[in-house]
Amino acid sequence: MRFSILILFLLFTPIFSQQLYEKQIYPFDGIKNDYFGFALSISDSFLFTSSIRYENTIDAAVYSYKYENNDYKFLNKIRPTIPEAGALFSTRILYQDNQLLVGAQNKKLNGLTVGALYVFELEDSVWIEKQVIYPPEPRTFGGLFSNVIVKYKNYLLVSAYRADAGEEDAGKVFLYEYINDNFELLREFVPHDPKEFQFFGTSLLMDDNLIVIGSQNDSTESGEGSGSIYVYEKTNVAWTFKSKYIPNQNSELLAYGCDLAMNDEYIIVGTTDNFNYNKPGQAYIYKYTGPKLELVQIITT
Image (cartoon, rainbow, N blue to C red):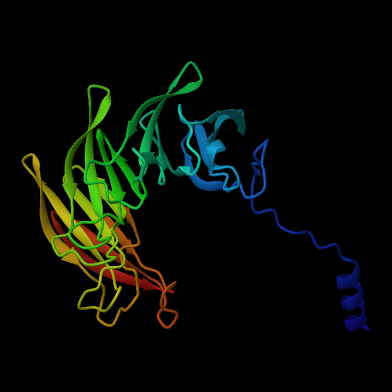
């Protein structure tokens, strides 16, 4: 009898799905294949999301929302002054220090696909285009300039991880400083041991005295495509290469360095199992002591 009562209780008890979100945001003018939400950036006051619009890429835009009264209210759409079909405006978005940085990986310059980075600032509730940054010559980038962007204080790191840096598609990273209301190029970083399809610049970190550059497709003694990170230290006014870190042995196709995270004491180097299903993804945790990284733990799924 108790068993029958339990079955009846389960049959007639309503089961409610758990809501795992506070709000869903849709584009008011969304179209098929517009890729709304491809890139995101958020702050205490604003939320930005991209809409690359693959069916009509000249209409690519960033949708901006302002956080008011515990809700995100649509503010406006941000587009380049001169839209360009196929430029993929808004492949990357970063809002920091009252500046909105928007990548356009396929932007053309003089007929050559190189990529670009747009700088916007808010004036009277309107986002104004202040600067368009193109990579310096020689512009052999395959359109991936601005694939990764990191801003730290007045400095800006921009990668082109398919750039020609002594080997085909080895990768380059560019360091800019904000001077006289513009970002000016300070220097380029290239791997000292370039290899084909190394993807130097797939991830970036920066603080006062440290720059870390991930190279997820680097082939090292740990295996083909095992990945690596390059660590640079600031000495006086120059950035000097200090060390290269690689994963444990037998890490073929691990893509170590595909992502990076940092706080005051620790640096986390991400890996992925997307390319090698026989090995799980991992997170390498290092303690940062000066220019050296001390391996503390490896987290495995």
